[in-house]
Amino acid sequence: MARTRPPAPPPEAPLPTELLLSPRTFARKLGGTELLWWRYLGVVAVAGLLGGVAYALLVRHAAVFAAAASGSSAPTLATHLVNTLGTTFLTVLIFVLMWGLGRVGAGLAGRAAEVYAASFALMPPLYLLVIIWGLLTPAAAFLPDATVTGSLTGDPRTLERAALAQTAQTSAGFLLVVVTLLGTAAQFGFVYAAMRELTGQTGRAVLGTLLPGLPALAVQLIAVSPLVFAR
Image (tube, rainbow, N blue to C red; front, top):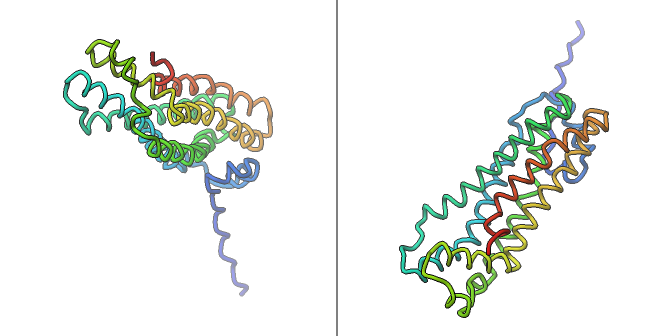
């Protein structure tokens, strides 16, 4: 009797970084695998945590300055954790918006959950760059000068806003805003190319990226609004 051949092993899912190198190749490999919406959720979590660390690292100077200048209690570890986890939560919210609205636009064939989650592989290296840049920037660069401080009241919120405005003017603060907003916008470029390959329809790919585009960018703007709108 002829031996029966063992069944071929299921195709392996592509690494999320493959989306950044070749979205079409990523899509072709992903199209041959079983749909698993949680496949790349770890990438979203890592991006969210690093984004939170980058944000908390920069704004901590403003909180410390406001406490010292007003004579109030210094910020605790809980304050920095709230800043970190707040950004992480917003990152997860953005992914949910991308997934839901992307699914509506591109349909089931667009594999919105997996493609959008994989697109977050773009963000960790960028946030690491912000973290390193922030650590290399002298702490004094994040604080308002004496002339500005002397004209302010002792209200901690007023002092903190002044320090946040100064933080936004540093290269590290500017880099965080640029990475947060333009990095998110770049994700949609990779996603569009992958969805076009997966669906075979330009219109579906366009809808899959346009529908979640503005809501996602709006949430990211909220995330960095303390720096963008600091006065």
